[in-house]
Image (tube, rainbow, N blue to C red):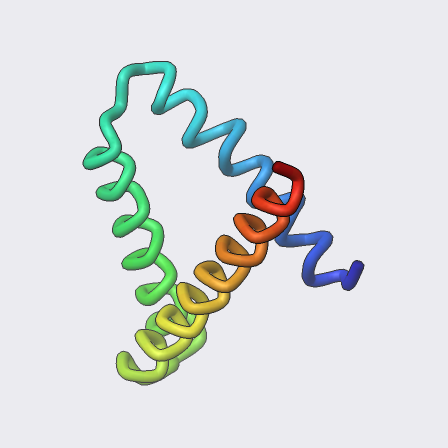
Length: 85
């Protein structure tokens, strides 16, 4: 596994345990979780623009690519789930 995949697995696990899990346990609806997701995306675009001085269009493009990569990971994981039964 690559260093990027290891980091992804570490951070996604922590995010679920420390943010998403407690929100669900606290009664959050899926709509509220989508607000959280939008907030994270917006925050990343702001960081890319303000801290790294990327043009807004470049920041949006990077976030779109990130979402595309997440969709591919999700699809690959579902394929593996299906192979197990």
